[in-house]
Length: 304
Ligand code: FAD
Image 1 (cartoon, protein in one colour):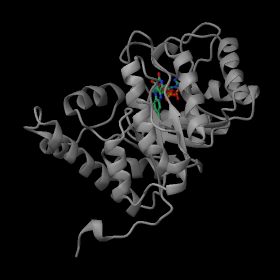
Image 2 (cartoon, helix red, strand yellow; image 1 turned 45 degrees about the vertical axis):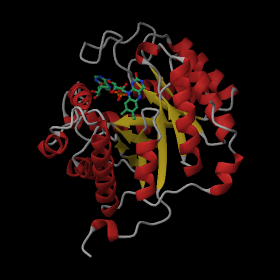
Image 3 (cartoon, protein in one colour; image 1 turned 90 degrees about the vertical axis):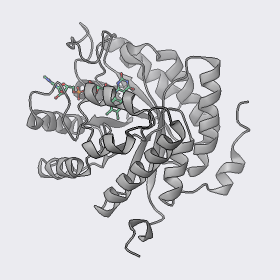
């Protein structure tokens, strides 16, 4: 038919889902409802973010452990260098290991004063993500994922410096990079090529952000260095008061993005779920990632 949707996708696409630790009881319910819908898709792993400045230390811990226990899916804890000494970070990592968590997403983190402000390493802390990876590997043999930036980290001295930094994180023991969200597939593919030329052989998993709130996405993209292409602004224009239509547009954009990536040979996708299931479930469904019945039956009932 000439439609890209007519091109079959292989059954072995691997997905992973990122959540954030809920703050209130209401948010907690939303999260577990989402988990209940997403877990039967049997992601390769799920992960839980660590609040800016380490503010969610306990909540991240509780959420990661509960996710792994209740779904049986390997759960990864995000951990940052911000606001803690090396000893404190090592102690947090040891607690994870003792609780059965084997995968850490190791990050530098942003200053508690905001993404745009200057970063100052904590005196006595790990300065950068590469140092944290090294430290974590000393604590235990964690599986470690790190962040990568197809359009460069906004504070990087240059794109080449940023790639060297990614290489250092891999050389320190990380076995997967997960990217900041992006919409320019060409920019991502160029980055993957440059990384391969620099000797980076680990998977560089694209981070997929299904956009529902375009205005907020523009603000967020501005602070983390992701470009919003003009065609996206056009797709969302006039929909500020129409969340239902925005949802359909968001799903279409993300499916198109994943299909383009897949046509380039990419078979792993990491979804920023924002603790909502519907978009990610819809996108996965269109990509051929469907619930596995045994997994759904094994799950306890959703929190109500
Ligand atoms: P790094 O890899 O340390 O790099 C940060 C910057 O410093 C880069 O510009 C790099 O080029 C530069 N740099 C590195 N080493 C040196 C050096 N020795 N000297 C000078 N410059 C150097 N934030 C949270 O707070 N919590 C989370 O849970 C979280 N999860 C994330 C998950 C993903 C997949 C991604 C992509 C980001 C996440 N972030 C999270 C955001 C992240 O903390 C910020 O983007 C942060 O600004 C950079 O973190 P990093 O690990 O990439 O830092």
